[in-house]
Image 1 (cartoon, helix red, strand yellow):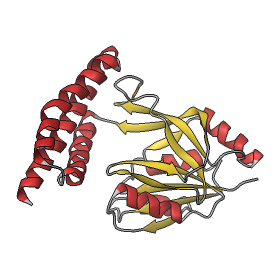
Image 2 (tube, helix red, strand yellow):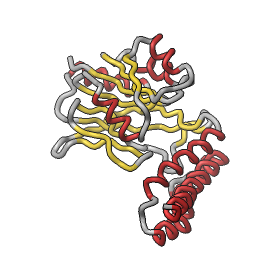
Image 3 (cartoon, helix red, strand yellow):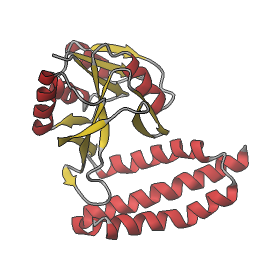
Image 4 (spheres, one colour):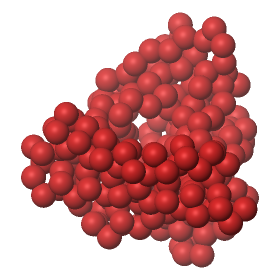
Amino acid sequence: MASLTVVIITKNEENNIGACIDAVKSIADEIVVLDSFSTDRTEEICLQKSVRFMQHAFDGHIQQKNRAKDLATGDWIFSLDADEQPDQELLQQIVALKNSGLPNCSGFTMNRLNFYCGKPIKTCGWYPDAKLRIWKNGCGTWTGVNPHDRFELSPNQSQKHLSGNILHNTYPTHEAMVQQAKKFAQIAATQLAHKPWPQLLVKMVFSPLFKFMRNYFFKRGILDGIAGLQICRYQAWEVFTKYRKALSIHFKA
């Protein structure tokens, strides 16, 4: 039977990390938590649950997730955020794969079901939100542009898709969405500030409207009522804010 390491990165996740660890105990041969020096009860909870708990200063989602995967000793790695849990169907799929040795490919994708204020959202461009989260140890790396990381397999490696969902408690409250949008906009702005200012200006003017129209109408956010409107509004606001901040950084440089 193949061994599986679950890796999780954290920063002040006392409200989520316990449930995340409990959700994967039945499938994990090892659970590794890489923490960014939390100031809440995250460390205490992790130690109570007997996981491998490590700490490293946070310098980007991509960098931290690559450190976390390098700590894994299992044959295969399952990466989760602290506010994510596999549902029962996905757990059953993983158990079956472990029993078969996880053969025939190097990675597995699965859908992620995002929640807003306790409601599962399948509109607004939020679903199926397929993610590659299980891979053979040593067969890939985290890439992308912070804060939007993605895992990529090494060249010539194959992947398959698993049924079931990762349940993502994205925004438990409206205020959490606002704060996350501010945080992600600031991180993205620092990555974009080197681009030519006319390009940033055009993006700031037109991209938010495009984002809203696409997700509210074409991605059916309108069907989720007030929740859909709020989500699409703040998706557009985040896009506007990141380009506005990028322009500000650009001209101060």
